[in-house]
Every structure is written in structure tokens, then in C-alpha cells.
Length: 315
Image (tube, rainbow, N blue to C red; front, side, top):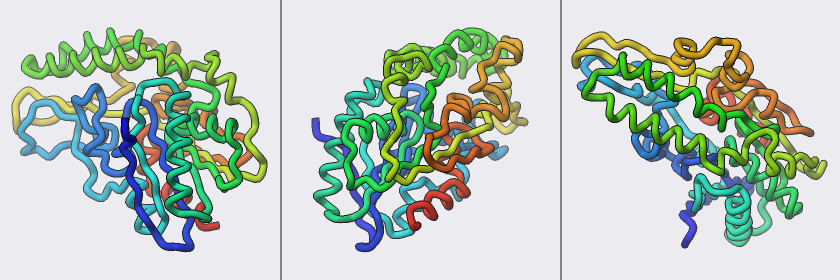
């Protein structure tokens, strides 16, 4: 199958960047969040980046509305004159070994398209693990640096989150209007399958994959990483009648109605995690690291983070 690969040619003297998306999404994670679907295609990625819908919004249930000023990293990099390669992994919930092999193909094609330019890899979430596995296996001198966002280098307990979804579903069933319950139930069902997938199990702290990439990267590489400390991954807005007042159901606050706070994993604790990865796990050894008060998706759309990435690429 042909790779779904996008190239953007920037200014001749600027480095080239390869963007590597995370688990279960595609290249639109970087390029256009409204085209990047989650929950099995039921909602756009903007559900994780949204604000309260306007009062005249016609529905009785909503994932919120996107910020009109929102810009993905692809847009910020292209505006700054960088050349960019971005692709959709053939198996977005497949093994990391497959994605790493695809990165090798993207890497070669990128070098052929812009020969002699410094290359940087930027990975979000699992994308950072794909990048590190690739670098440990290939150690190519053409790669000048690695940037990671919310990457679980020490693993994540997200695979165990499925046990919390059943009580959430019961709570939502009582709060969501009847005509919207089937869509919500489908979203919970698809999320459960996703969390129980082999690709998610591969990210557990004790997995062979996590053990295999613990080795240090070459010292010549420039490195920087970012971790999130706000576990407010998304909010569900519901009301009884169109035009009525919105009731806000934030995640993971919903869990506290069914699960004692002391039982929540660190990924879901304020100040410790971004809802899917702990800030501690997201540290890329050997480089600068910054913790940002945002969630797992928002870290890639945070303007301050994007500004630091642009500065890192320029120096």
C-alpha cells in the first residue's frame, strides 16, 4: 500500500522536519485537527481542544467547538520556512516495529527530496517511541535532533484505563439525553476496544517494547522533550433542550463519581499527568525537558510549546 505522505518545501537554508503522529490518528493530527477523527471516527480531534459551544448550537450533546485561533505544528513550521514531511501510518493501531519501518521509508524519501539539509524528527505520544526505536536501530548522521511531545518513554498505564469506562458509561447514561445515548455508548465501546488493543498493551511499563528502547541515544543528537500536567482530556457538554443551558461533564472528573481519587493512576492526577502519560515518563534523557499545564493532545497545539520548538530548530 502506498504511503499517505505529504511534503511541504520551505526555504533552502532551513532544516527539514519529519512529523510522526501517535496511536490511532493520522497525519491530520499535525495538519488539520478537524479532519483527524477519534473514538472510531465519531468525533474530530478538536474534541480534546474545544471550548464551550455557543447557546444557539442546535444539538443537545456536544464535544465543544474548536478555538478559531488554533494552529497545528504543520502550519507553524511552514510559516517559519521549514520543509516538512508528514505521513499517515498504514497501521495506526499496529505494532511500533511496523511504523518504525515506515519511518525508514519516509526518511529516505525526505533525504532524496531535500539532499544535504539537516533533518529533525518530531514525535507526539507513541510517535516519539517510533522515532527513538528508529534512531537506536539506524544511528544516521543526517538526523540532527529529536523533539518529543507527551511520549511515554517509561511506558503508560493507559491500557488499564478500560476498567474505568464501565462506571463512566453508567453515569453518562443517566445524564445524557435519551436520543444521544446510543452515540455515547458507541464511543465508549470503541474506546474500550482501543484501550485493550495489542498496540496499547505494547505501551505498558513492563512491555518488551519499552524495555528494548531504554538505551541512550547518540550524544551528538540535539534533544528536547515536553510533558503535560493537566489531565482534563475532554469535556462533554449536554443539555435537555436545544438552546438551553449547557451542563459540563469533564474527564477525568467523571471518574471521581465512580472511582475513589486514591485509586486513580498518576496519568489522571492533576500536576502529574496529561490524562494518558505522566510527565515523569515523558522525559527524554540527555536533553532539556519542560512540563506544560495542558493535556495529552493540547501539548502539540500549545503556542508556547510551538514557539520553543521553532527556537530549538533555529539554533
